[in-house]
Amino acid sequence: MITPVYSALSILLICLQQYLGVEQLTEYPIPATTEVLSGLNSKPNYQVYVGKGKVLTRIEKYTNHKGPVTPFKLSLPPNYVKMGMSASTLTFKVHDGWLVAYNMGEWGGLVYWYDKSGGESYLIEKLSNVLEFITIDSKIYAVAGLAHGDSSDGSISEITRQNGKWVKIDHIKLPHSPQALSLLPDKSILIITTDQLIRVKPDKSIAILIENGFWMPYLHPKSLAVSGNTIYAGMAGGVMKTWLDNPGKQVWMHE
Image (cartoon, rainbow, N blue to C red; front, side, top):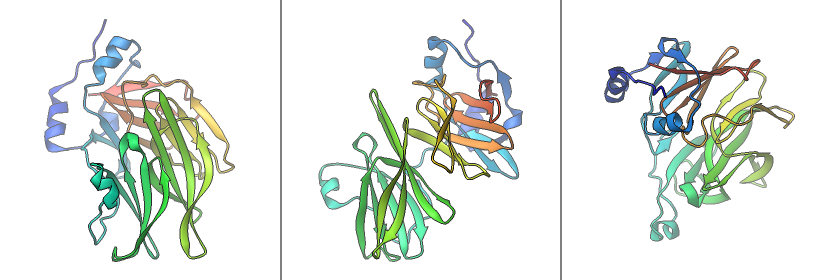
């Protein structure tokens, strides 16, 4: 068995939170055995993102908040706090205030509206954990999912105003829980789920690019970046490289 060897640069990246151009990583065959994949599970998670006009990678830094900072303190509703619940938060600014998703892991999530000062609020919907709020053609969508045990489910819901209040409208059911996404120029959504790489098209159809991802259940992809025709997915131990027009070809990358 050949076990991937990781350089001291990984430790340096963790300490300094520096980034590399993804092209600086070395390409290897996709890890294929359970022994190798389970060994990668404990490796740092690579984050890929577009910056400085190219795809960059760095060791992921954990944070329990994503999105713009609100001018008021965010807190779960008191009844959830009394139950000992905690949550990560995702914020999205709208014309009359804020959309805030509280993600409570296996317990699911809540989506709230707050006014600009945080003085008024109401529950929009109990949803699975919201991965991202995205905008397409001036419409706001919540991409959400929950993976726990043998279960993995996902959805895309429209968040819109009706009769003066924000509401959720069902839009698309996803085959599995989304882990990372990227908007493509044709307004389709590229999503890596717990099990698959899929493309959600504007007509709501879903194209499966990779059926049974090699990453499940060990590598937990958490980021996705696209440059032209090339797709990069960051996960535990490295980055998967593949292509929109040839997703059957996949390459593993790390230092």
